[in-house]
Length: 499
Image (tube, rainbow, N blue to C red; front, side):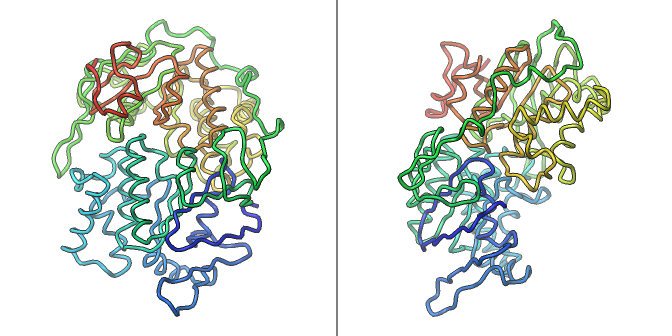
């Protein structure tokens, strides 16, 4: 039961925040409000802005009626963007007008370009989504949500994939929309933002329990009572990997874990060329826990794609564990990746028809490591490590986004790879779950694994061995005393000398 007897009144012109732990029911609540998921019981009433009109009972509309109603009345900012990959950014933004029957080519394009200007993406207007960063995609999704000028906007973690400066800009956009009379409902894990809503609801185990939030990772405020996480609910992270068998010995390749020399990546499309990486040189040893930070569009995800063999560099050399991975064929590189690199994607990439346990077993099957009979036990141990043993037999659709991210982390460790790369692994997690994940990564690094995470959370940089800052496709090594720290970079936007 994801929601349990929720009663809420949301007022016109309100900036409402919804906060809670992963799996608390936040996204499900948004799905009820927007009619994306069907109610089991109860009702959701929408009151039109025009006076004298009767409220609309969302649960009684057909799918076609709901789609038409949403197009006119609601802008939705999904957690994973949901942009059409074959359309450029302008056409993605105009799409809701086409569906609502309001499309006028010249005027619609002008409105789309104006919205891209608001979210500071005008120069990327005719690029495909694949050629911009995750944070930039989120800003496009926000612009698309505004194209039909809806009175109500719902946003599921709209700042979770953004650096601090861009997140502040997005929050200010929502604030101005509320000042202009719109109603905004926003789910967030960002405790700093929780103080800035006009009203904030806390949801816990499907129950909306208060209208205040205590900004403390340990406690939630329910009326005047403090409800803290019990010891039974806390995940034991003291020895997360001690009972999980390894398919290989602890002896690793004496070569450096990651070595890049003069790596350049240029994308070319109808709008022209764009160089995402500009002569990257990088050396990372085994056992290092490294954070990669930078503004949206700086090249973070592109760099991860080079390291994992997912995308080809335009020029330069990429050696992982002493192997020149781009001298391999696609098939050879796929098998190499399965055995040597665990990947935590920003948006999970779990197979929807398999349970979390089966998703975790899958890499062992493909790479043929561990005896067949031992694979389920190893997968269960990994799920237990990230606090998901009770959900092992659930499908991804039946757990929260944060829990899906935790499952993706368990899956990345299935073949015991010496290197783990993670794109915003804590971006969809509440502070307690994020702390569990970081503690797991720290212990893995202490055991000799190399961990590289992309993060926008400045607090995480104090918990890693080394921080790399990327700006405009160039690296600044944050481990140098003379270079600019990640927090200084995000404030000033002025990187130090590239390395």
